[in-house]
Length: 337
Image 1 (cartoon, helix red, strand yellow):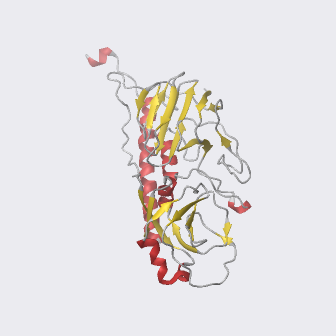
Image 2 (cartoon, helix red, strand yellow):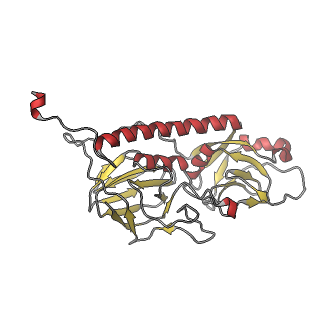
Image 3 (cartoon, one colour):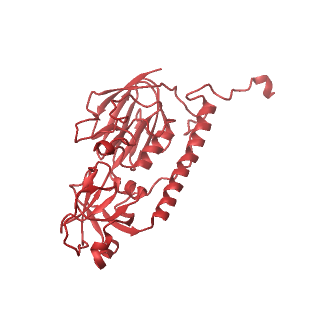
């Protein structure tokens, strides 16, 4: 049964998914949730597919009112979550009754939170994705009074005797703080920096307030390019670490253009990109060298953990009848005597 939610305080929030994977072939950025691990986890905890639309909330407080019974999950940066005025837990499924208000406040360590709703929400699509694209002016930026259509209603799921949280699914939460360690592999132009390339791993960099979803700008001691030849514009990956000037490093994130003309010193790993997605202006960043094989192995471990979570959620939801008929029933009193 469909329902809807009313946005009362949007803060800085958009409806997004994992990205526009068909976009780069047409010259469009991939975009999508900047912290992919947290976004996937939120959808899994809500019983959705990984790539279903969800809400990305950046830095500011957020509040919405449910017009029907729903089930939500909130992941990402540490914050204060309340439902109907009651403190509720992140990284767990949470029931919301019709008429209750969901409030997200106090994002002050880390930068982005993700709110998934069981059954997901309706959103406009471009090339198979609802991810906002500021270049072409596409996307659903939430405003006060925006109504989102939810695809399913879920009756309240509560522990029947002591009103304790029903879910303890054991997902490891990523560390977040003001000092971040980010893994990178060698970039295609690392040789052009000579011995100064090592500065990337021995220096500390500060996140600039001019950073955004297109790229993070980092101030600190910079490696210097030893060659003076012109770099032609070419395709660059998400995560490319560029040295565009003598003033700052630039780490391209998911909103980056598909081509660029600066030397690429290193490439941030997929897990490292999730770390940078939570970097606030003023946070300190250090880079650590890794290999493609090590980065691939770490990525697979991360995905395996999410798959284990999915199995747990599917089992619990199946038993409770969330999204299907319940697979258990109370025994009659006579059977217990």
